[in-house]
Image (cartoon, rainbow, N blue to C red; front, side, top):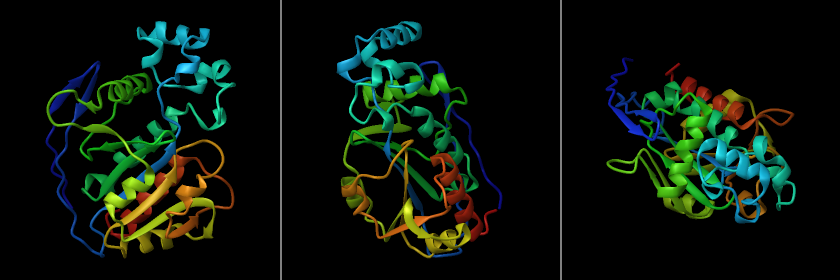
Length: 257
């Protein structure tokens, strides 16, 4: 199946975002679009209680930004974060970054069959235009998301490629009204990856939820939103690995790959 791409450059700060238009793959199964959510993601601006910490100030100065305008990152703010509530589930924008690179670059997305959302631990939701091409440089990604938290959309003018809204996971699911909501969790029913792909494509409007955090489990109130809980492996896997498996297996079930 041929893919028709149109490249239009847009500048947002020091990054280039490319827009793509995709030729839709023929529907082999019931699925029209896979909704994929990175939930409770460890993505947030530095909280007020640590903006004056030396490690935060040094990092902000190095970036040429105010301390309350930079993303919390445990790689740079470990000393400051130790006093925060749930500090070991916060400050990992790299999890979101690598996961998004995996799924947005997938054949499933290139065929126009994927819609991705990022829900954060603090109940913000980022909606991504499937046509976005994220920067391949991590620091440029940080700058992009910092602009998003500051302004609410990227780019600031014209059609947005990412937008930010204050919204709970439950609110988002109510809006999407999925035919089936599947949470991928260590506590779920052990299922082979190919079986999961087949299960998803048999749904008209499926939704898959993957944890965007580094440790622990989903909050109880969020776990209750699941129609089904699935585990793909006997041990914990990184979010980007799970996300990659999901989009690949759905692509296989649809005979895209």
